[in-house]
Image (tube, rainbow, N blue to C red; front, side, top):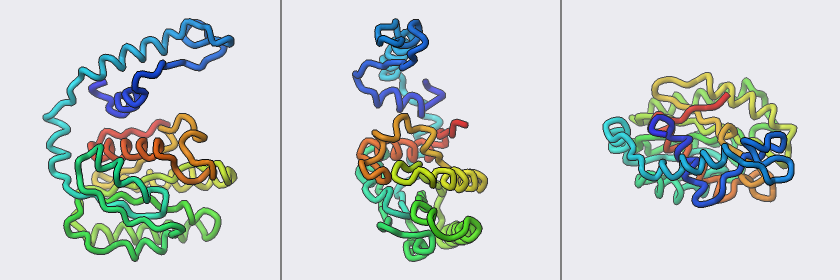
Length: 238
């Protein structure tokens, strides 16, 4: 648990709820077909959760990183427009959100200004660029955005927040995966990528009824992912 912060955070988010391993074919480790299985994996995870409350995070590794970050800037479309409160609560940092509903990659240039005091820039874009325009044109504009941010700011880290799968237009999810693969390919020591889709257990509970926008609980998960990325602890599960 000390070495995998993402797992620890996810486990603690279950609160006092019972943890169930929903495996109908395994009544030993799971709940079985009738829901009356031993659920030993769930029991083990609940015991780990109790231990997680008592584990102190290593100060020598994590505290200095957060102490050097004072301000976080969120750029992009409306998917993260309401994340300010959740991220500020998790990090105790100043968070500024410059996200616009319906914005495309070409609109981000208008959001890149006054970056002098920004320590971390989080970019979440592409949601509104899936149905029109070519992939190569999007990539060209995105790389220009990255260059502009690096040129105009002295930020310590750029975090690319991956596009989230959709329920309203599921045929676009293949394109989403393709762009996320590209985002992953531009990672460097100062640019990180988060594939949120690897941390979503149930997309129906994560998204609002419109199948596109994110529920409050989903925003909390994304805020956790961003915090872990700032710590250098976020790992994307293949």
